[in-house]
Length: 88
Image (tube, rainbow, N blue to C red; front, side, top):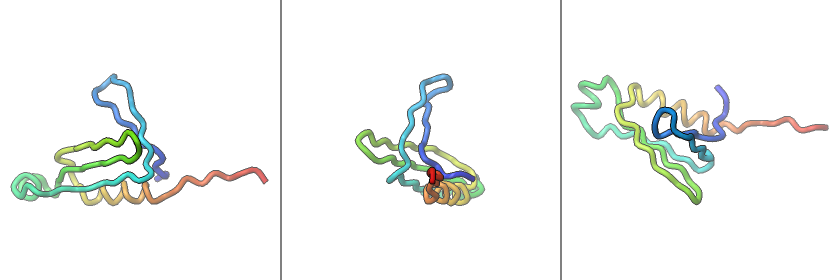
């Protein structure tokens, strides 16, 4: 797994992509709908991604399966920093 330096978002298939810096990005899970997320969803939940900066955005991804594991993976990638070896 490599460090996440940017988040790329495309609104529709074939649409232009927008890249957001991951510095200050927050990821949140919501499991507020008991019937949809717990009983039918097998541990699903809604994922909310908030970017920071001058052009901050908020993305809602509904019904993400195994939300706990995926949020943990995303948070791990956000914590990692890409290390570039400089010339000596």
